[in-house]
Image 1 (tube, rainbow, N blue to C red):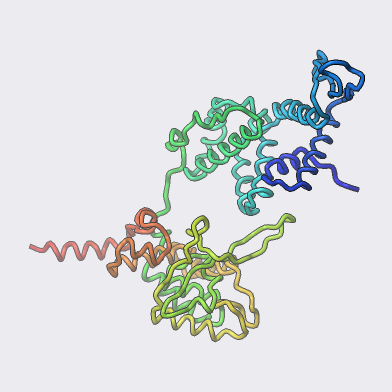
Image 2 (cartoon, helix red, strand yellow):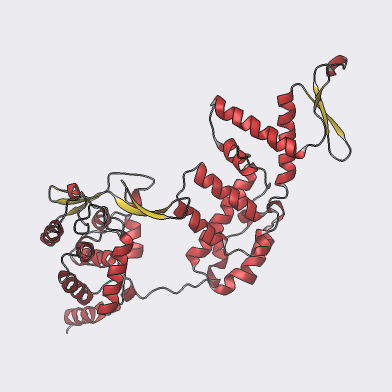
Length: 410
């Protein structure tokens, strides 16, 4: 038995920009089903009428039985679809509009399940009162009251507040496009007005980057477990600053002409049944919208030694890092867990792969590399490097003090 097409399905079909006759027939059929479920009055052709009404189609709408006359049956159904759709749309809640937006993102825009899950998480911060209110009736003051009463007292991070604002903007913009509402109240509200109510504390720099001593201890610990690809991944992260997802996706063929060609990453996806899986894409994090074949990191002597250890792992695989006898790439989740456990055992302040990346940038600064050179090697914008990777670490202050005093001796 064929499953009836729902209004959500129909809206997704209407989003598809195509001249396919099959799709057009499907849309027309769905429109007729939609109208027939709501329109209880007869739709008839006026074959016996005289004058301009002859042969046209007639029906009535509304409590006062307003007569509607159209040239063809298709025109009549088109009018009735718009009529009932407008009536239905006026009652769509914020929650229903959000569901329609997410279906559009998934089925028409091809957004990943990770994106959908993140939207659902941020939507969960909204109050039930807002979620259940008709979209067209929500005002900027409704949202401001929710912010002050329910959300800001929990001291959200500034980034989380911006994400919530972004999602609400998307919902109302989609609602306007689909005639679920006629205004976007978010345009009257600025997230910057609420930053002072957010949690603005930051991690100490010692928790963002490994110190030299910590790097040495992590290296010695990893060398005790040379047959574990996850330990070797941490060694390569220390020497290259490669991102978490880039390490497991590194192919053997990416080691070429004295460089490591970093141009892939491993992602974690979720299928429609909720099962997680790992997959590889041919772009790095900074290239998702503008691929440019990645970046090249010079192959140092230490890097070469690490790659030699990785090549000694038993089994054939196109990946540099794989478990013995297994051709598949190592999952980044298992690498994170391995690194975190080792960091906790060794007592390091930082416990994640990003701390290798920031420490590597600090080393490049000490070696005299310019901001543009560091950005090229690490694979991000110069501004990003200066704002987020160049840290003033309290652990370096004693060395700075010694150099300062020695340079200012009278």
